[in-house]
Length: 284
Image 1: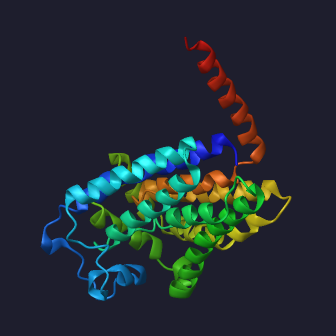
Image 2: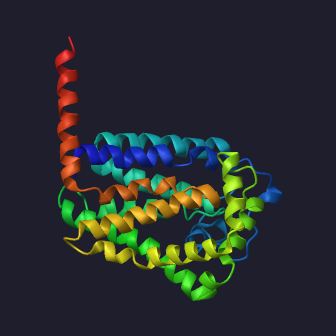
């Protein structure tokens, strides 16, 4: 994999990962902690209740802060290609640790779940040795994430997901669940306008499910135009979710990078090499 891609991939994870929000959760009062009877399977396996206290709600702000600093350092090293095998593995372990810790607070982590999986695939299939299969596996992971979301809607909502007011109800509910979470007041105005358009909401529901279920089609070889439209459609869908549902999928940017053609990364590599050589030549 190109140097430019490595820099962008790990740099994007570093920039989009919500370190501050995770640190905020360590300071929540006891009565706000998760009391769900059935936490996530992975959280169960690593919780103190099951005999392994490596992930615990009792961890202090300072402890999680140190883990966050370690994560930041490993991501920087990975982005720069320093001690690649060690820093890449450490990035996967530390990012996964923080997400598992965060899940104990019953916070929805679907914005972050694809990241440790992508990092695991990065370590299992080093792009430096075989960029083709490595990229292919990341794209498969990408399509599975969306396909599973579409299948979940069909299994749980069926035709009602499209024919009823499911989307309108979600739009209304989000105003209470994410109060003051929007980036701009125009988001609430757009949300309110969309709620008043039942036919448009049903159409958008159909489009969303259709895009998610068609995600695997993007994997068809030698059909770059089809892949472009499907991946672009999914990106626009997630942008729409940010605007009216207030869920920020910016953390998915790293896995979108795998859809950019290798020729583009090759050109970026050339520009990056030119900058590096110019910098070295300008030093005394």
